[in-house]
Structure formats: structure tokens, C-alpha cells
Amino acid sequence: MSVSERPLGSIRLPDQTLLNEGEQPIGCYHRYRGLRWQVGSASASSRYGPVELHGRRMAEVNDGLVRGGGLLTGSAASRPLLRNLSPDLTPEEEDWLLALVALELYYDALRHRNRPRRF
Image (tube, rainbow, N blue to C red):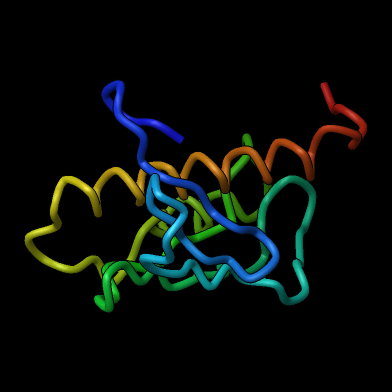
């Protein structure tokens, strides 16, 4: 991953370790791995995973993204994408949070890629 033409680092997915550009561990994203309950296209429960960088827990990322209208859209839309956000984030922490939100968007797209479309 890179941000502003400089390498950010990478994530080692099997153990969810965040690595700097020199492949040294700098943190962890404890991505939610439990059951995923959905009704239609809306998540029936929010699932947050804490993010730690340089020993500091900086936020929790929600992997229950909202897709279109549906029975649970109102309550699902009110769930924040990030919660327990630490004050005074560094630019590096902001970049990592943005990258992890992008990762969740990617996983969300993969989960919904083969589902039948409703018009």
C-alpha cells in the first residue's frame, strides 16, 4: 500500500499484522471473524475490529457496510464506520485507518459479487 507516493506498508492477512515499508511489525487489525448475519442486503449486526498501531489502540473498524434500501437500512446506516476513535491521530494513523476501510470495502464487494441482483 502507498499513500501520497510513499509506501505505507502492508498487512499480513493470516495473523492480521500491520507491517511498515521495511516489513517490520508496527501493529495489528483484529478483524472480526465470527458469524455474519444479514437480512437481504443489510447487515443485521455490527461487527467491529480494533486497530492498534505502535502500541496504541486508535479505533475500531466496522465491517458491516450498508448496501441500498431495505428493512434494516435505517438502523444499519446509523452505525458508524469507525468508533472509539482516538483523539489527535497522526497522519500515519489516519492513513492506516483509510487503508483498512478500503480493505473492508474490498471484502464487502467480494461477499456481494456472486449474489443475485434485485431490481
